[in-house]
Length: 425
Ligand code: PLP
Image (cartoon, rainbow, N blue to C red; front, side, top):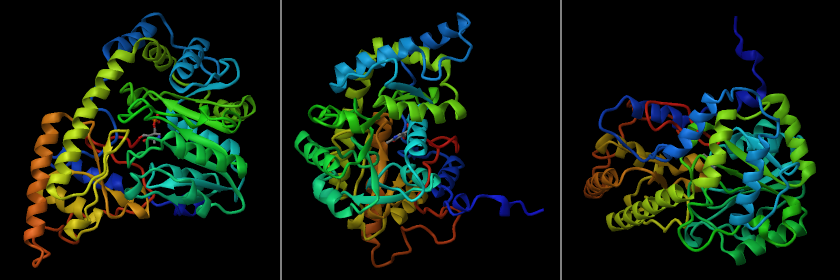
């Protein structure tokens, strides 16, 4: 029996994650240095893991309130006030979720009617566009550019805006570009959102990993708290990807709407992870800062090295991604990534995974050991030199068409796994 005809049309039409195929190939290869997946190489700091273990020992094995443990919501409220200059009521303005992934999904499901338009800046995190499509919304990309360090500008937003736009997704600092906005740029964006009556979905999962200046949250600007859903999580700054824990804060009516979707789908986040998250927020700052210092050292090294090699790379102001342009090699990001993997066994993500305007770039995650980055730099250099010196003989260094290393890499896609094709974030 052919069951495929029973699959919903909008799911059939959703492209499969090509990047996942790519990393499945990577996982079968030996001696690959992966700058691929966006997750810390650090394990969760020990005292946070202990809080999870202790929760289990104490028999904390039950459902929690749909909104999440009140102690965690209080800790979130204090943390947001200190770090993002915004105050949320633990009782009805905070919802604990299964990662920022769930927060994004339920926000779209709670707010988007079929046909509503949702603006998002691009290159962007791989899940935004598919998530909008899955709720029958219409995604409207707003381009950002290397010349602006990939900061979103109010002018680009104004050009992309069209009647029917209801939401704007912001991700600052941004995955994959590391771009962010300074206060002045953010004020212009906020002004535009008020003018056009847009609700903002602000994914600030990389906020703590800001290296240049102070992170400014859009929600702290005048007139924005009432129209913003602030999303934050533990995966990146506290190295807690596997715990699957995050949260959303916003106006009580919007949190209530999201809570309804959450209650019928997820019920609550894991209680063990919630207990560990309390520890992260209350006593995790030192460990977080020490990881950030190491990311900054790695960023400085990698970006300098890429530029030396001839791959123009702007300085990412936040996140743990470098986003070099590979145009100087005469190759697209996709061909470059495939050729590099095949020739030198270094895995980077083709920029086209993050939107069409990322096609000339690759993403290199520097949440990878310093020594490995040094070796990756040497291998990339060798590959670029080989490509440049064989420009007259293009088949010499590029990927072999039809080889096992040429999976389709179309956007949109989930990010593949760093090790052995594990689940994609
Ligand atoms: N938002 C962005 C911008 C991300 O880069 C990621 C993960 O890579 C997520 C959300 C998902 O985070 P979580 O692990 O909290 O679900």
